[in-house]
Amino acid sequence: MSRVYNFSAGPAVLPEEVLREAAEEMLDYKGCGMSVMEMSHRSKMYQTIINEAEADLRDLMGIPDNYKVLFLQGGASQQFAMIPMNFFKNGVGDYIVTGQWAKKAYQEAKLFGTANAVASSADKTFSYIPDCSDLPISENADYVYICENNTIYGTKFKTLPNTKGKTLIADVSSCFLSEPVDVTKYGMIYGGVQKNIGPAGVVIAIIREDLITEDVLPGTPTMLRYKTHADNGSMYNTPPAYGIYICGKVFKWLKKRGGLEAMKEYNEKKAAILYDFLDQSKMFKGTVVKEDRSLMNVPFVTGDDELDALFVKESKAAGFENLKGHRSVGGMRASIYNAMPIEGVEALVAFMKDFEEKHSK
Image (cartoon, rainbow, N blue to C red; front, side, top):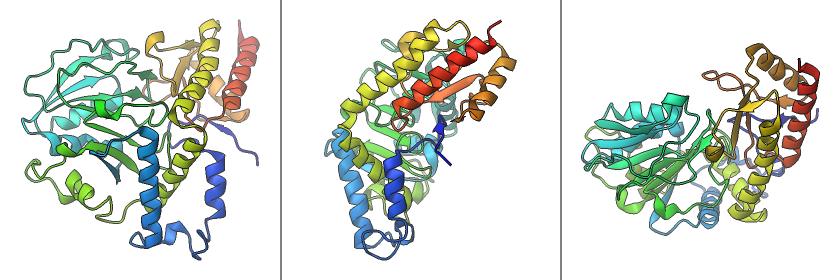
């Protein structure tokens, strides 16, 4: 069986090289006679794996020394609660709502205090990023929150919001490591790894040290305090050990490819192939305003639900997996993360051209 082109939004495609390497090490990691999956997280060998993973990530992103790197569990969705629990001092968070995940984070924060939606693109089905140059930021806001790349709707912040001096927190789940990033612009940058970095089950949180304190909301469980994980090197309890090991391999793969500058160039080239086709197609249309398009998630439609369904069916038969759009919006979506080869996008466009010729009225 040959591998398909997997356009899933997450869990998503991983570099073949990484999968092969992991397969080779599955029964015996570096001569220790066991799999990383069976290894004690308290062993010297595993400590080396997690240390190397953190060092490589710091290197890739240029993470300053005054930021902690935490490997956590519970998905990005658990962070929706952890963020207010840990960072609410005045009990106020300002949220920019640009899609379903930002909306869920905003709703979750309301359980713990005041959450303000200071901007939203809900009026046009989240098909654009609102102007964030002069927002009504609350004077007593503890932070301003964004979801930087919107997996479902295919939008991306190209310019970070003007937070008027307030701490910026960003969920970068679906654009993590797709391009260079200035970590110092954020108080916290975090994401689930299952889209662009590794297998489901790991969340990476990069948090400025001064934000990690004992001063959390009363009743915050031990496991939901960032300090618990920061003080214990992400080893307070058993971490998602195997997932972290795969992430570490992906970091090395990225470094070998030339780091995040090289990845950005590659991702722009890949995305242009698909967007250029969508812009000239008579059948298929992209759903996002040009200037806010994501390099990672490309939603598109034909404008006819039956034709969309036929496209999804025929594309699957042709070896293109997971092109169906999110259940909340329909249509199609191609997620073209770091590990999607350019050949996959070229093959998809060739298939779309054939489909258009065959089904044009």
